[in-house]
Amino acid sequence: MIATHVIPDPVFDALAAGGGGPEAVRLLRQARRSRNLLLLRRILDGPCGPAAEPAAALLARVERADPAAARSVIDASSFGTWAARAAGDCPAHRHGGCSAGDLGALAAVAAVRAGTGAEIAVPVHDGALYLSGLGTATRLGPVGEALVVVTPRPQAHLGADGARSARGHGCQVEIRLPGEVRRLPRDPGREGHDWQAVAFLEARHRGLALRLPLETADPRLPSLDTASARPAAWQELLRSAWRILVDSHPGRAEELAAGLGAVVPLPAPARGVTSATSRHAFGTVLASWPADPDRLALTLLHEFQHSKLSALADLVTLHEPDGRPRLYAPWRPDPRPPAGLLQGIYAHLGDLAFWQQRSAGRTAPERTDAVWRLALIRAQAERGVTEAASRLRLTRLGARFLDRAAQTVRAVSLDPGPVRVAARVEAGTEAVWRLRWAVPEGTAVKQLAEQWRAGLPAGPLPSGDIRPASGPVAGPGAEFGRWAARQRGAHRAPPAHQTAEAVAAAPDRLEHWAALAASVTEERLPGAAVLRRRTELVRDLHHELATTTAGTHPPDPLTLAAWLAGNPAAATDAGPDTGAPRDTGWSTG
Image (cartoon, rainbow, N blue to C red):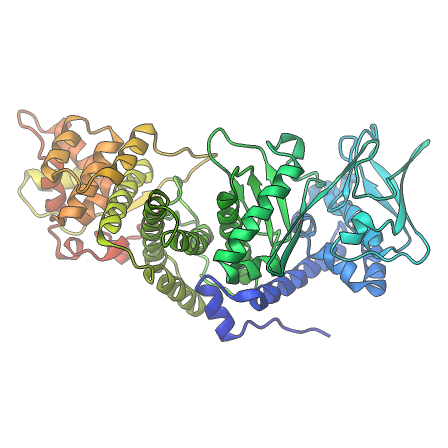
């Protein structure tokens, strides 16, 4: 029987506002399970189907014997990433190199958890056989696959969550190779000879529990060998982070308990902490060693927001396709696609909840830092909301989703001081972003220069485009970073005429343009919106006049911005569309 997943209106609104509760998370998990099964059906019906059929048959047999054990595998991160990859175009299937056969490893894990007898071929990758959620057999030699044999012990039954599968000794597992039989430890949750068990992290506080694999048994995931902390350190950190979440964010902790599925350790970056979420792996958080429990708690909140929105997007369409628009997201140095912008906004709702709670207590220095972070995140999220509202072709549900998210952002109340400083940093950030990525239309700058020299008004501002990013994108540089950091200690921005002089003296320095955009925004001068949201146009026009007007000094950027804003439609602060008529085709990043 085919059924339809339905998100009730109150649940949708609660999710859109950033929360949702454990019942909403369970609905999303069930929907993601259906998606994974549909992908499996697509794989079986496609050219790679024969490679997956034996494993699919074993998984179906396990499902009949122990539905919970089968669901634990279908819900896992490895199943979602495998299904998404194998369901796509696979030109290698004709040569036996497609990934459909990797389902054998997942089916074998389901059989072990259910205590179901099985024999299944499992691919070997570079001498290792990965049983996701269970462990990795190493040093298997140059073979392409091995036979995994699961033999139940009398009266054995293993729990679907992996608890007894790791410690219950419910079955014997052998890996059979040509001329060799490798037997896993009686307790597969313990290390053995050439066997690296997946560690499980456990935390319980006030009756709310987490049990998560520190997932390393997947050839597509980073290796624990590259991480900077071992399982015991992760275990202790998670216990502390869980106490913070349960005590300070009980509603969000209930969501995490209902939906968080795994932690994948990442190599430590040169500075700070890096984290990520795959849209195909519901409830899986990838993170480098966060070093303190507050940071881990924040990371779990932030990344689980991504999982929730990815699963919700499987059920509802929030925006229409719109080519490849490149949008401005204040928290990223690179242009973002529509889905990426919405994901960033939604993840920031988790950050807001965290820092809002932190801003209300603790010691004065910690409280001051929390208030600053809260103000900056609120400014970034609010700007992201205006970008999405004006640039995306939202569906009816998408507009409703964004409206609920915006209400959560704007409900955060702060003193004027931090709000003003955060707005200053955000104005400078946007100006610098536009200088890096925005390109005015064709000959528009030369035409504007001619109009300026002729004493004519600028008229409607020309359209422009946003260059696409290629490869990893670094931030705007150390000088800009130092400028942004100095704003926290500055009561007011420098006078606009002073920052304009600095720009005229060194127009290639990004931090000068950031300071100018911040100053004119704070002073609410004519042309402030143009300087912030068409910065590249002001800079290029200034350069054009400086290089083509003989015998005279070019006008200062403040004067040019005010002239460009002379069009009534451009002079009003109408949000991200300021100075860009709707019919020009101007796309932003």
